[in-house]
Image 1 (cartoon, rainbow, N blue to C red):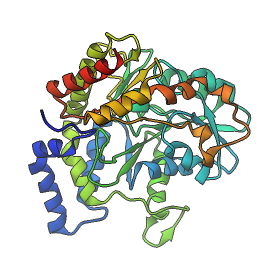
Image 2: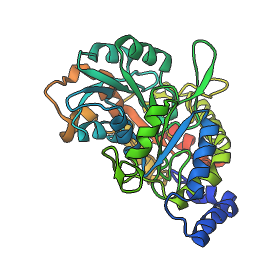
Image 3: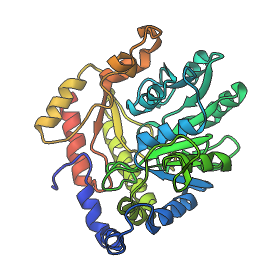
Length: 376
């Protein structure tokens, strides 16, 4: 059996090395390291893939979120609602901009932001909602947009974990997640479904005026060299990373299908144990691209299972062990433990198993057998 890894980037690279190497070599030979042709080509390719009018590449996913909020002219003290159960980058940028983070609980069935939580958290100071498409599963964007429209709020999609996922609206139409709200942000961190070989990110929008502003913000507020029209930052996707992403983008649907197939095999195998909650996978599975395959262990043996898997050489992780409302940086007297029952429970139960494009049946069988053996 091949060595088990949480993410097998080397195995993925071996299959596309000629395309990737050619892109990198092009940059090296032409010395176009910043804002070179490959950046613009990748931008156009991604716009076509997502069906969105504007993609604005930037340096990383955290910058993408921050720049999206800067582009919306949110003011210090404005309240921004987001999920308590997610990575810190989502709330980090809210705090950095001196906005007021408002953390709410998540839904037990899909681990995405609670609709009831959003509704209860809205005040006259609320200006935006940031749904996170957690672990690759699309949040309920119909309902979120309905709430936002009712209260005149912006929606900023944190799409760092779900690029390529489809969202089917109540009217039957389909859109790529990240393109439904007023603005979306994603990360190209190497382990993402579409990852580069360093840091990278992008912002999406169908709003022409907002896109223009965002393009200035990512480049020191300049539209013309040395003319600074808005307050900006230095956040550009470099040409080598763009070349890697341009080479990988045509394979994204295949990568996501491989993850979906692996997830389906995991869930079928693990469903025999009633102490394991495994993700439900519909026939098409378009709404979930499984950046992570996360299960819940409901009999109190999660930590024991974690140690057991590690002893057996099976990489695994807990996403996330501490709720954001309990983190020192984001603690606030406004938050009460009883407001976060689902998040608090998830932090005690979740465990992520290896998930990547190169998983094979032998590896999945070994992993699931080891999990079931321990919990039986």
